[in-house]
Image: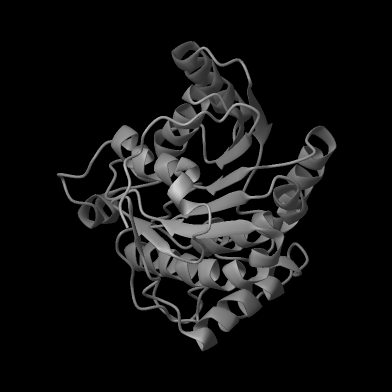
Length: 289
């Protein structure tokens, strides 16, 4: 299946983009705002988010852009964010999980979750479930999980890198593979609510990651990688194309629909089990997965 991006009128539709203060996330938000959507920028740092908002509003002449503090690596913060959003909005039509981080050294959240896994897997899992009622109210609605065009062999026995020597590149790629598995699992759960969820690759984008970086990151992404603006086009297409309204649980790349390469049922169940366990761990408690 192939489709051109094309213009789309998103007037009256509410879109949430995480990691929207810079890079790919900001360009996705810009693309949706240009099409008339009400856009919520979910950002870790509000000051940076306000700068992004001013730029997006000036560019698209759309004043309906708001900034809300959100740390997708923190289950407590995600729950607080969802509660705040439910108080201000009765429906959500598009959720784009695009927040991304890079950690050269192993770091953990206050809940004891390894940061890369927390940001790229646990965060999208919990945020999607916390906002399922709002997405259901906006149905037919879409969830977009931004993934990498490459992935690595996933070791589900040590997602926290407690036994293995930490490898930043492999941690990143494993987490993006896990996000594809999570997409397949959530598709089954969200289908009755008429919420479509897909894993979308923006292609190689430089810089792709909002934070961190260094030698390993530079080696992972090719020098001929595209700009955030170019990467955002594929994601905005996934958010808006009428051809995708009934498509769920798939991998979208180059504006084409592909089967999810990583769809082993046992691995899907295990990723969801790990996420469910991690989001219930109290802050400061040791986590072993």
